[in-house]
Image (tube, rainbow, N blue to C red; front, side, top):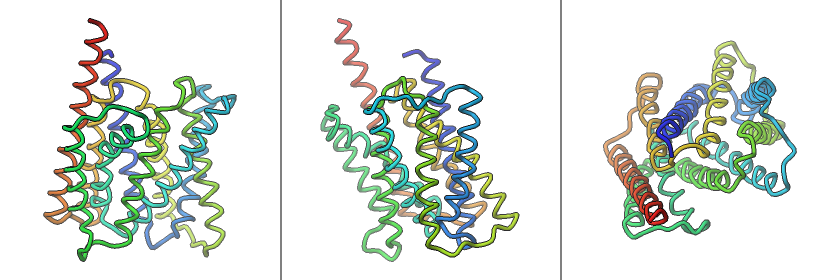
Length: 297
């Protein structure tokens, strides 16, 4: 794998995390002003238009795909819908840094799920790191404590849905355009939340809320596209650690714009999750290098 591919993948991962985190901040700013389903639907309409326009401009849209690819793409869209609902429900009711800290367990859950469902090897060192990382997650959500609520469960469910989403992308053909995958997921989310919004009273959208919706659409557009592209370029062991840049953004945004800062145990838990996640990723990279060396020998 060339260095240029690795650097491109790292930039895509960092860009994806920045896009998702700034989108989260814009959506959180709408909490209490606009119902969740209405906000996601309006954002989705703008996002679909952006994706479709860029796809036409780049001539990178195609819907002539095999039945297998459509099944995988629809499964990924289902996972994206579940992740969107669970995550935003948690985000509207929890500090942004706390929710983002829970999501830092994704490298651990993806490695565990890849071992369980895709047959990828998982040694005792990485398994131990994953188990320790889950201890960090427990410190963040504090089950049984005053800070543990239904929204903490929603944050954990979001991790499960995103894990499923990323595993599905690994199974998709490299020939399936990233733009098509992102557009289909965006349309599925927009339609589902549009239907859900029919059951709530729509709120008026003043200029402030409209501005946040437009910014949110732009940022989620970045996140959608880059999250698909990043799984297809570079060495995942080199790229994946850049996922943690999202936590840095969340801490800064939470403090400056929402006056939020995690308590000590949450920061300790986040540190454990990040450290074990990095160890898991680096260990996986070492094993991949050894496997390649043996094949060459």
